Image 1 (cartoon, rainbow, N blue to C red):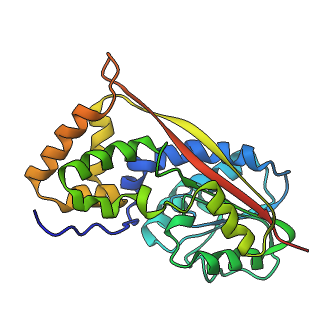
Image 2: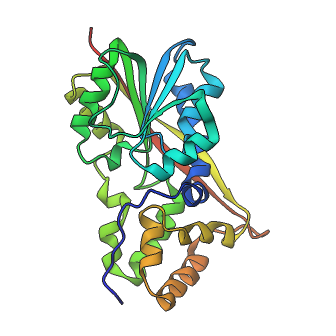
Length: 267
């Protein structure tokens, strides 16, 4: 088998939507319910991707304004296509936010914190642009346990190719638990830090509905699936078909849990 080359690939909006975007659009409103913010606030969505969290803010929070920051050109194009001028989008990095000091009330980041090269620098920037007493919050998938569509994939992949264990997000992001996230937020100077969890069902009509998104190349697991040769990919597909729990009607009913965290910018 060829050497594994499977980076964190996040560029093509449609392929991302088929893989986890459709589930991130479900978990975003649950996160906002957990966050418990009043109407009329100025929001910033850091790492806004294809716009799932920004869309949920617009739909449920009655915001005064929404800005979105995203480094990926492809994802930004998808977000603009979804949301138009209802969000002010910026192509920029989380560690260098193009906003003024104390210019927003709530800074959120959905399914991004684990991918940031320098989380401490990003949290410092998020705190800088938030007003004193403002909120910095985010959520990440529970990669090690209840993000089940990925757990089944890596179980099969590592069984067939032990080298794939180095790519498994469950191991790579093992410190980003509720306790770990709370510690990082507190270390960044945020106060009244709390963590929690939200969970959504991830039903698939049949095995092909589950498997096909892994062929899009967006994300670590799909990038790995497309990095191996066709015979190896077919073996992975068939092993997954054997492992993934399937209902009598052929559907697959899994769940996806995300860990949530929030803190207050000190006054």
